Amino acid sequence: MDTQTQEPRNYGFVVGLVTGAFVGAGLALWLAPRGASELGERLTDSARSLGERASERLHEVNARVGEAVDELTRTGQGFGTRWPGSWRAARAKSNASPRPPQLNRAAR
Image (spheres, rainbow, N blue to C red):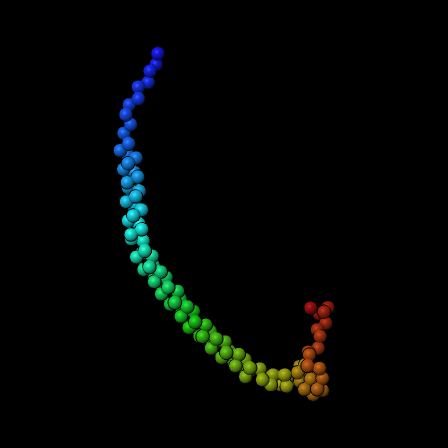
């Protein structure tokens, strides 16, 4: 008959694994709040800096667009009256409808 003899089990590895897990978790809890607060401060500073740079760029672009619109407005003033065949010149002469004449759809 086969009789199996049970040998005593060595639980040393399991005890070491559980102990290491608890020590690691404790160290993580002890060190994490300080690291998280530092990380939060760094992220807040980075976000603030990014917002300031984006605001500066927005103001620069806004100024450039304003300058371009002003230049186009100065260039375009009187354009319709300089060209005798333009719809603005015709409207100015006849005081007609403010809309330009409709394009022939077949010509498109």
